Length: 100
Image 1: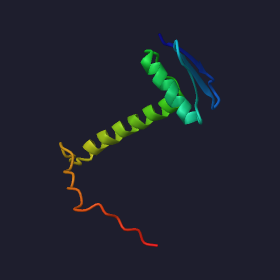
Image 2 (image 1 turned 90 degrees about the horizontal axis):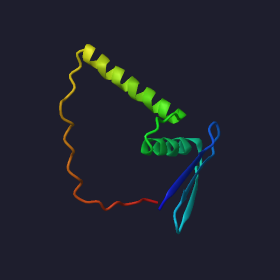
Image 3 (image 1 turned 45 degrees about the vertical axis):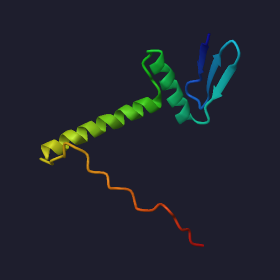
Image 4 (image 1 turned 30 degrees about the horizontal axis):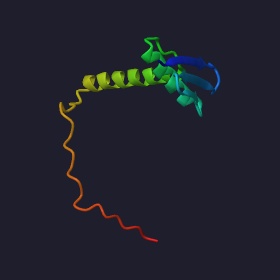
């Protein structure tokens, strides 16, 4: 049986997650605030809680900007292909030479 006990230190670069089972205890500490936000958002997604981290807000804003830019391309009558471009074949040999 696993017990998840998250501790979020909001407003700092520290995030602590304690995962305990019958045999093992795992303690995670994020190395930076971006990683902390990713872990916090992942935990919230897994537990059906709305994520509220700063990184989530930045990502959402970025996606909204992309959506607006795509709509503006349509207004400027730019034709976008329906299918992605063809991937070129791999090179005939992968032997790389390094020069001194």
